[in-house]
Length: 204
Image (tube, rainbow, N blue to C red):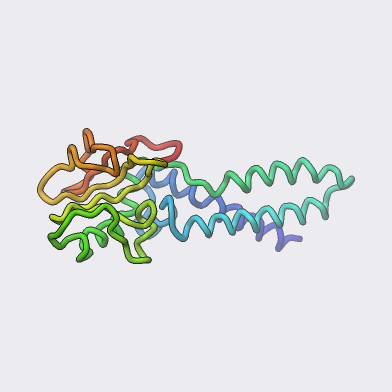
């Protein structure tokens, strides 16, 4: 029983790891090496859901073993189910914190030959599998002159928001899948964000 309880604690912490990391990131306390924990897509999502599933399973087992009479386990399990469904989600840490967490991978995208080489503008430049979690749908928009738009959210029909890399200029007025970039915020150097909330909280 003790082992099951300890395993359950570890599983719940795993399921909640994104929320913990998001809180740290919003206060600039998350190490760069742990940035993947706040990515809205990628391996962290699967790790958290596995943790939630294991945690719920152990909670059910422990509740059924200890509850006397058995019906007492029902509300405990119901609360556990709600917690397991809610815990893997990651609150938005804010534009700058998310950019910091993703920056090494974003820099790799900006350096890709399909992005950095001059050529025709494209709205569907595919990313390598290892970088697909950095953008909605796994592809980015390139402007043909070294600039790239890396969408973090997208509407059902059109419109999007995300990070821009535009060497030597601002992305003001550029297309974001149907929505023009207005009042972009410089993040660092040639990196900007547009169509994203600056403050933390809620979702993208």
